[in-house]
Image 1 (cartoon, rainbow, N blue to C red):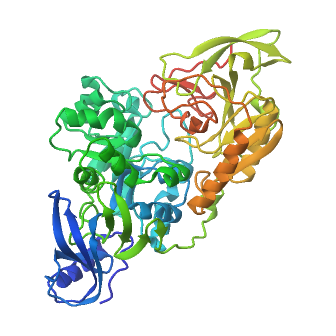
Image 2 (image 1 turned 30 degrees about the vertical axis):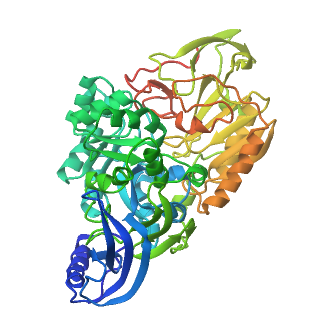
Image 3 (image 1 turned 180 degrees about the vertical axis):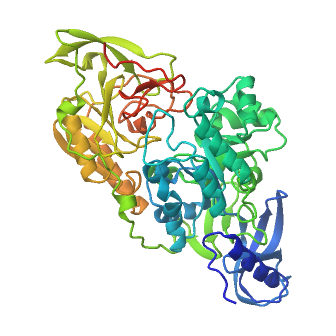
Amino acid sequence: MSRPDDLILNAADEVTIRQHLLLVALGKEPADRVIEVGRLLAVHANHWLDNQEIVISGRRIAYVGPIGSYRGTVGERVKYPHLSAVPGFGEVHKHIESTHLTPEFEAALVIPRGNTWTCEASHEFANVSGSRNTEFWQKARLAGSPLKVFIQPGSAVPPSAWEESGGYYGYDEQKQFLRDELSVTGLDEVMDWPSVWDPTNPGYARMWGMIRATFEMRGVVEGHGNGLTDLHDISAFMAAGLSSDHEVWALDETWDRLMLGLFTELRAFSYDAILPGLIERGLKDWSNVAFTTDDRSAWDTLKDGATDHNVRLAIHYGMSPEIAIQCATINPARHMRIDQWVGSIAPGRYADIVLLDDVPSISIAHVYADGELASTGMDFTGPMPKIDWPDWASKTMNIGRVLAPADFAIKAEPGRETMEAAILKPFHWDADYLVETLPVANGEVQRDAARTITKWSLVDRYRGDGAIASMFWIGCGPEDADTALACSVAHDSHNVWCIGSSDEAMALAVNHLQGMDGGWVLVHKGEVVATVRFEIAGLMTARPADELDTEMAAFLRRADEATWMYQPAAMNRWKPGFPEFLIFATLTCSPWRWVLVAPSKLAPNGFVNVQTGATHPIVW
């Protein structure tokens, strides 16, 4: 009987694979390869074993024991007597889209850095093409990519009841995902907290339908608890069935979650604020802690690393290497209920092995994925499939028309010389919007660069009607005349955003962006001077990481020639200079309140309080 190729998980093939594996483990069928190592971390027990052999059949491990103990025959032996073996690192929660690489190129980037599996938090691509989400994430794997992608359908499709996107997930969709696909693990980060706790919220039925479907299929419901610090709120969050939170920023909120039993996923930028404190308070059991990347671009990964960076940084802040490795391997695998496939070097699991020449510094010599050598040093040696991405993935900029400067105008009431305007700033988490008096000229409300007030617009890119919502923002955007920045990465609905000092520059930027199928466009003093191409879903590119990095570096050099306005905001990662972090300024989850979304049925002018549903005119 021929063995399955073991790329995409399904129950029938899983039985066949394990029937064969047990015979290999007993020595009754030959093994393909044995890898001998000087040390092996038995990650379940947090214990090092000396002089071990790992017996591999196909893509899986059949046997682990002392060197020379396996009683069967093997095809080849590979020996690493001076290296230490730890399991392939995993991502408990990551948006691969934020790397801006398609999955086959993501594999080439992260596998040399030890990352062999990822739980894809898939509300990014799903908001672009929700009906093809699973198909998209399986394409690279089916073509032979060694990176295993476990799919978490997003609760935020669309992100809130006041938004529309290219996808819609509810009870029926979630039930089908979990019924049809073994690689689907549950429901990704429930972000719209008001739609969970408030029965009057128009998103209440949809959200609880997805949670119900996940419960029925015994999946994992992931949470997103940004801003929930009161014990009543945390208790309500957990009572709703939300099993985890990666939105922890400070020590006390992390401690409270862990003491209540919430699985806590730590992002690297908060390690300095959290890890030393957990160690000082004497946290005895770290099994409810995992490391997560969440969002990290290809250029930042090239500079800092992938999951290896998370582990290395945790060690820097006082964690033992062994526990840090557990937080990137067995802990997340157990939480996601996929530890029968990944998270350890153990029989039945995929043969994903990171070989370290120095454990405390997480210095990686080689990585095996699917039982094959996939990298030496930082050189990826695994298979690189060539994928011809179809139009549903590569032609997603359905704005539907060429935009004119007048489309960005904010009209004034007849006869007015000034008007009051609702003003937001990036990461405006205040209870209410700001109000400023702005001048009127030629019947239109004007920007005020002297007060760093400029125009911000969101353009629908799904319906094909070119609908635009515009308002005024403060403390961001270009100061130079006839300058604009447009981008098709706008978490989480991923409509097009544009900020600019003139309507002419904004129209030019967005029109150029739709012509190149998405990415970044910079118009400086009336001319398109720099672009970055994200031709897949407007979020990713099917190119190597170093090629994208080169293009982004050239873009940033041109962007540095412009002058960018700046005022501090609630988000401490919002910094002066080129406003790259504006791609996250369109979020609508807690703790956001007043936001601008692309025009929708429930928010025709786009300006809405996503906590209460209140709307308000842009100017009056």
